[in-house]
Each structure stands twice: as structure tokens, then as C-alpha cells.
Image (cartoon, rainbow, N blue to C red; front, side, top):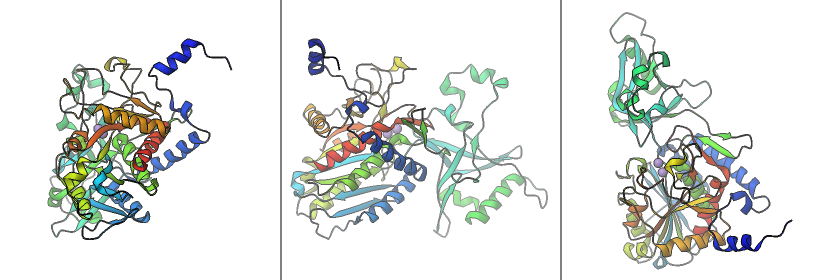
Length: 466
Ligand code: MN
Ligand code: MN
């Protein structure tokens, strides 16, 4: 080995220069990261929607000994409880050795992802094709959602109040669905439009059938045939769509990317790539000193509004309820609490370098991203984390040998975005954004690096175990 020059040694001491996570890993950690990611891929394939994720994590948590939270019960260190929020969000809580007057350690991520929701009255027929009307959910680049296989997920409540669960297009042999697009031979007008106008939201119609009800001729015979099939399979009539939540999502499975299998391509990394590691960390954190609260929330992609999003009172009320079990006020617990707002950040893409400030961008494989602020136009609409707290989190990650880096969501005035951090900050909790860098964020098929997924797990575990 060649000796380091004085300049090299000094640079190492004085410069901030995050490295590829592989250089930080101990023996066996690469294998551990790969093994962790195999489970994560299974999770992605099972949990495409917030409802599916909530049900899956709840079942896992019950196996891990979590029981429904009872506000009238009293709890001791190590007790594990959960609270389910309207089938779309979940809070896991492990009581710590210290009382809640010392605050809770909260990790909050989201389990909703961009997609195409069916409109309340979706089914129609045009030129003997049956189609569904959709209204997109979250920030999408609409052209990316045409000509890819889609699957249908969700719930329908029939007029008698009974529930039907739908998941079609995921199993081999299942039919799938698609938004059609123009052929290049005839797209002269479309191709000359700006990207965001080329495909209109109102045109994201989904092809669902083409054979008529054949017994006797009538108008809308293709639509009738589809309704008949749906009636046979799900026991529904058209009016039942009005009380349904049906979501079209990419039918892809999570797969390895690259000759070296170092990355994962999948739908819904944002933000299941933080949700899954946070849940695994909640399970793995043994006998923590502080009470750990792991939240997987809904509605982040549409701004956190609605009673299953973090701009509602459900987290505040839960903290007040656990505080009450120790004779404390919720606000005193919140004031002493700390949170990692666990959400993805944009990974630097060498094909599109101009949108990033290289000094402050996040890079895939350099570990978990600590994002001091998000927002747009002069830090509008963001929690800008307090320096004291950011330093504390850096220290925690350094001590835990967690590869981490800083990150900003693009160049100044290039665009921007937000997370749930500001809603948690509104409760008076110390909070900073932390998460995994993603390539092609919000595309139907996003890419993350396996090291970063594993570092998210290590980071959340270190936070919950402190
Ligand atoms: Mn997100
Ligand atoms: Mn997002």
C-alpha cells in the first residue's frame, strides 16, 4: 500500500467527501445488504397500495408481538402496540425504558405512491372498446404511464355495505390493463407539443375490454359484457364504482438492475424504500431507552391532506393517548420528541446533471441522505431542520457506521417538493428529512441502490435504539 501524502491526510481530515457505501462496509455487510433487499423486493411485490401495505405490516407486526393500542391499559418497557388509521396508515410503538417525559423517537414515512385512480364513474364504451376514466394521484409525468402493463388494486363497497377487495394483474396469467398511445407515424402534432401537454390527464383512459355481450345486439354491448363479468367476479353493479377506491398501478415486479445487481428497479420505491426499512428497524430495535414510534402514513403524494395523512391530527392524538397512559400531557411529550421524516430524495443523474448543484446533490450508493430542507422558491413550504438537531443525527450515523450524505432537492429555483416533515414540525417536534436517493423518482419504474436501502435500515435502527 502506498503511503498517503500530507495533503491527502489533511484533505481527509478537513473536507466533506462522502464515499461509496461499499468502502464503509464491514466484512459480510454487502451480503447482509443484498439479503435485506431480497426481502424488500418481496415486500414491494406484495404491497403496491397504502391499504395493502397497512394490512401486510399489521399482520407482520402481530407476529412480532404487537397488539392493538388500548388507551386504558398501562404499559411497561418493551411493550409493543399498534394503531391502525382507517386501513390506510399504521403506527407501531415500542415503549422505552425511559418515561415519555423524555420524548419519543419518531420515524415517519409514507406508503402511498403516484398512480392512476379510477374516477367515481369510470366505465364507458367508445367504438366498441371498453375503457376506464382515471384521475391521476400524485405528481406524474403522464407520458410515462402509457403503453405499460397496469394492474388494478383497491376496494369496492357494495350498496349493502359489504366490501370487495380487488387485486388483478399481479399473478402470472392474470389479465393486465393499459393506457394506449399514438403511433409515431401519426404523432406529428403530439410530438411537437411540450412534454407536459403531449399527454393530457383526461386522456389517461385505460383499455379494459373489446368483446360485446353476444346474446343479442344492443347499444354499449362491450360495456355490458364487462359489467356482466365484473358482476360475476365481484358481485358489483355499476353504481358500486361510486363507493370504491380503485387504483391502477404498474404491473411490474421488483427486479435487480445492472450486471452487478447493485440496484433495484420497481414501482413505488417512493416511499416504501423508507417505510420497509423503518418497519424492520422497529422490529429489530431491542429494549430501546426511548419510546419508538414508527409511522407509515397515507396521502403524502397529494400533500398530506385527509384524515389518513399527516396534516391531520392522528399522530398528535396517538402521542396524547400514549402520554396519558403515563399521566403526561401530549404536548409535553411532543416538545421533547425527535423525528426522522423518512422520505426519498432525488439521486444525481449523470444524464441530467444540469438540474442539480453537484456540491449539494445526493448520489446513489453514498448512503442515507440527510436533507436539511426541501421546499421551493426560497425555501417556501419546508421544515428547515435546526442545525443542532442535524449535527446530532450526523453524530448518530457516524457512531453507528451508517453511510450518509447531504442532499438538496435540485438546484435553486429548478423546481422543488415537500415531505411530511413540516407537519411533524408543526407539532413542535424536532425533525429532519432523511431517506434513500432515487433515480427516475415518481416514474412507474424507479431505481434505488441496495447499499442505500440497507443504510436506511441501519440508520433508522440506530435512531430507535439510541
Ligand atoms: Mn416521498
Ligand atoms: Mn413522492
